[in-house]
Image (cartoon, rainbow, N blue to C red):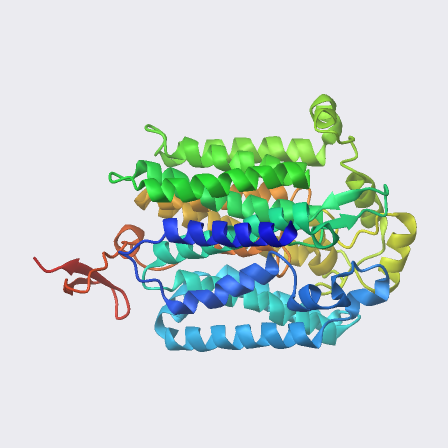
Amino acid sequence: MSSVATVVCGLFIGTLFALYRDPRSRPSQALWIPTIWILLAGSRMVSMWFGNAAAEVRTASQMTEGSPLDRTILAALLMAGIIILACRMRRVVRVLVMNWPLLAFFGYCAVSTMWSATPDLALKRWVKAVGDVVMVLIILTDRNRLEAIKRVISRVAFILMPLSVLLIEFYPTVGRAYNFEDGAFTNTGVTTNKNMLGVLCLVAGLGCFWLFVKALLEKRRRARNLLAMGATLATILLLFVLANSVTSLFCFMMGATLIVLVNLPGTHRTSNIHVVVAGMLSVAALIFVFPEIFTSIIHLFGRTTTLTGRTDLWKVLLSMDTHPWLGAGFESFWLGNRLDLLWSIFLWQPNEAHNGYLEVYLNLGWVGVTLLLVLLGTGYRHLVSVYRKDRVAGSLRLAYFAAAMAYSFAEAGFRMLDPMWIFLLLAIIAVPGTATRQEVELPLDASQEFVPVELLSADDVVYERVR
C-alpha cells in the first residue's frame, strides 16, 4: 500500500508542476540553489534522511555536534551561491548599500562570536546564517524578480507539502514523532517536529494563497494555475490540521486576511495599511504575550494560558544571569550548563525561547535587539514602498512581514536556517529600481524578438516585443 501511495504522490507532484508551468517565463537555473537550501531548511538535513541522525536530540552535548555530510552540502550550496552573486556583483553591491541595517545586524552578530563560550561553533553558525542572506539575494537579484519569487515558492510547496502527507499517513516511523512530555505521537511530516511542520505550512501557505489571489486578479485567468494552487492550498490546510500548530495557523490566517484586505478597492492609502498591520500585530502580541486576557479563546484551541509552558519558560529565562547588553554571543545561549539546567527544569527539553525577540536578547543582548528593530523598521518602510508601486507584489511582502512579527511572539522566528526568517528577509530586503517596471513577466516565444526600451541602470533592462 505504501508503495502505491508513493507512486500516487509522485504523480500528484508531477501534475502540480505540469499545471503551473508557464511557457512565457524563463526562470534562471540559478534559482535551484536557493530552492534546495530552503527545501533543506524547511524539512531535514540530508544526514537525517539517510542516517541515524533522524533521531531527535535528547542530550545537551548533542546540540554542539553536527554531521560532516551536512556541513559539506551546505558549504557547497553556499559556495555556489557566492559564485552566482559574484557574477551579479554590481546589482548585489547596490542592494547591500540600500540595506545597511542588514549589514550592521549581521556585522554585530559576527563580532558577538568573540565573547561566545564556544566561538568556533558560533562562527560556524554565523556562516550558515549568512547563507540565508546569500540565497535571498540570489532570488531578489534575478533579472525577473517576481517570477523568481513565484518559482521558489511553488517548487517548495509542490515538493514538501504532498511529501509531508505521504510520510504521515503511510510512513509513520518517519512522518511522526514521539512526544516525551505527554507520551503521545505528533505529526511531523518532512520536518522533525510539529512546530516546524506548522511554520513550513505557514510560509508555503501564504505564498500559495498569494499566487492563488494573483491568478484570480489577472485579466487572463489560467484555470491550470488556479487548479494547481487550489490543490496545494487544500493539502496545506490538511497539514495544518494534522500538525495542530495553533500559532502557525493563527499567523497564516492573519497573513491571508492581510493579502485580501490590502488588495481591496479603497485600501491603497499607506495610512490604511499602517492601521491594518498595527492592529493585527497588537492583537497577536496581546494573545501570545498576555494569554490570560484571552483565556476563553486559548482554551477553545485546546491550549492553556501558559501557552503550553512557554510563559513559564520565559520567566525562568529572564531570571537567569546573562549579559543584558551583549548577550551570550551569536546562537550561543542554548549550550553547556545553561541547557542542562533548563532541561532539568522542563521535561519537554526546550532548545529555544519560543519568543523571537527574547531569543535575540539572550544571544545578542539589547544591542542586538536594537539593531534587529532598526532592520525591521527600515525593512517595513521598504516593503510599503513596493506596495505603493505594485499592490499585488507588495501584499505578499506585507503578509510575510506581519506573519513573522506575530509568529515571533510565540516562537523563535529570527533564527538561521528557519523558513520564517528566510521569507522575512525576502520581504524586507530592498532592491533598487522600480518594482513595477523591473518585475515584468517576460513572454517567451523563440520567434519573437525583444529589444531594450529603458535602461534603468547598467544591469537593469526592461524589454519590449518588437512589433
